[in-house]
Length: 109
Image 1 (cartoon, rainbow, N blue to C red):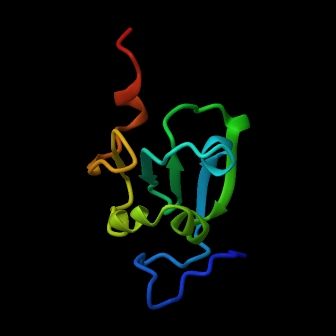
Image 2: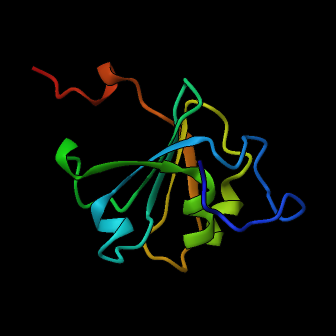
Image 3: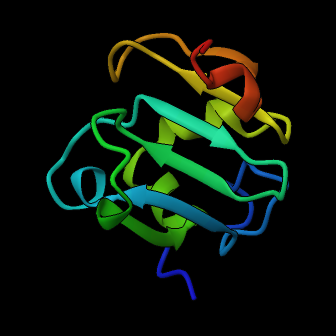
């Protein structure tokens, strides 16, 4: 259950406030800025800093808790499933694109 204090009238997402989100220890506990967000095909959100992809750093949280931590995530409330957005700094503009498939990310061999 989310501990978010965002009121329903302020909630910008179509997903419920307690929707599943994945973040990292670095974002949640160490204050790293959110610089990469993916809205997975299954509807889950990944809210990341882009400095680690070690599964040991991953945490499951509620989307509402992450919005409360960084309200600029509301700018991505319409990010379609299967898309990602990134920015160079916490005050930068978001760039959006479809998530590349696993095959596209594999180096040519």
